[in-house]
Length: 125
Image (cartoon, rainbow, N blue to C red; front, side, top):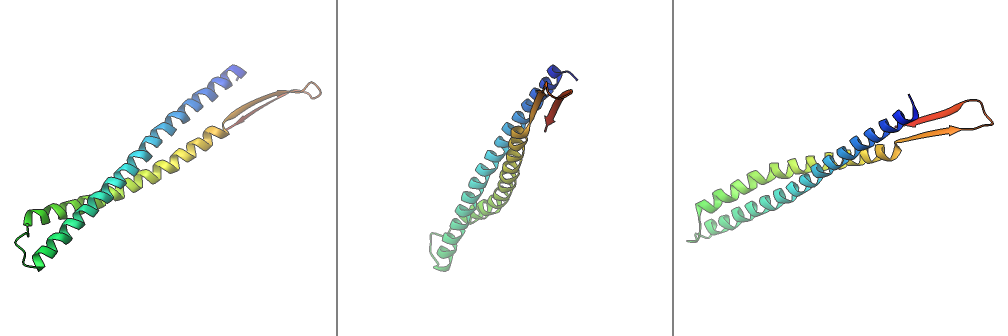
């Protein structure tokens, strides 16, 4: 393998790692956005249910069954959105860090020392 081929291989691996970092960064950001939306949705649902339960217990004319159904739907949908967002965010963070480390450790060193016989070609990945 010539030195030019080695550098071309390093460049293609760097490009691959950069693409993976960007892809996993989007995954991480999407996951944490989903987590935030899920937490807010769950909190709104629980809040609606609690408010309507108070109205029901006080025999208030303000009790609305449709709001209870909306609260239950928000709470039920918010929990899996939160869980899925956490999973995506954590996996994305782990993968971004992993490929950034690989990118930082990728190198090709070529050394020629006239005082020693031969050349040294070191490829680290």
